[in-house]
Length: 372
Image 1: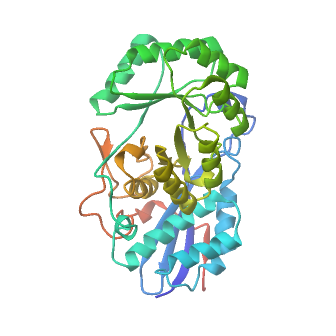
Image 2 (image 1 turned 180 degrees about the vertical axis):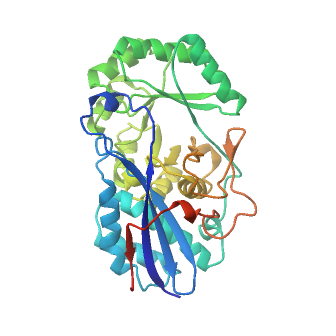
Image 3 (image 1 turned 90 degrees about the vertical axis):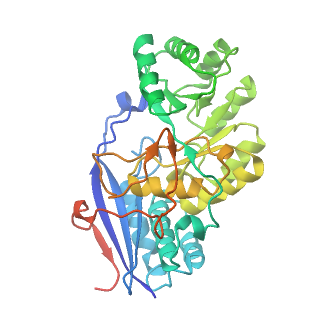
């Protein structure tokens, strides 16, 4: 059994997400796509991976970099036994520094393929599930008090109890008013956090936090750099969820040691790929740090991958996953479903990721790597 072909597809997407300070400040609005990776063996097995590279003003990456990164390392993948996945991943790491978006898609496909080669669901190749089901987060759009309460009620009826609130798009006093309003709306069992998408200066963040000290809100990645977030944490003692500045497992460890990090959002592309994510997850288990496991965007392939990953952790260490499945991007015929605000790996999960890709919507390949 040998890997004999890697095929890349580009599927356009319209994310339509509000990124607070980024949206209004950009002179270049790049087209976004999902890069789908199909890895085939000489005896007919297929592994799938995907990545949606973030806009380069949001993360330091390009979609073209993901494609070229996979092309660059394809010689150390082609011709290999997919069951020897650890050795393949080691050679990829040696051949390519950075390029977490390329590694996310390629490593996802290789793990899917390896599990299928062993005839196992990926969760079982990784030692079996630890959690039975896991919470999923909802992003609540803020408006007037009545509009915001109605938005919360809609999500609560779906079973959600973990909410991300976007701030940072207006004036600082407006962010203070928004956080105070939402904290009054929140129910005792709910978990909420506020995400300015790195939009605050250190002074802004300290001003917000001091004005709301009695509420002790959790803030996600308040400032642009890790060093700025560290300053905010040291000066205020606020609970911080780090996201985009976690660019490696080493940075994760540093943030814990510096007492900056209360919760970690592990974006697979940002932190270095699937393997780097698993390394950070191991540290999270040792150090008792709750995590979100996600990426910038994607489809049912990504949702399957992060669901398998997250089920290897105890429930109390999974702060909330995100549901990427959309009717606008039906890349998967049998996506995992969120039920009552929770997601669960099916008991009858098939081999590998356990999802079937809808190849009819992939279009023509953008690259075919392997023997002609």
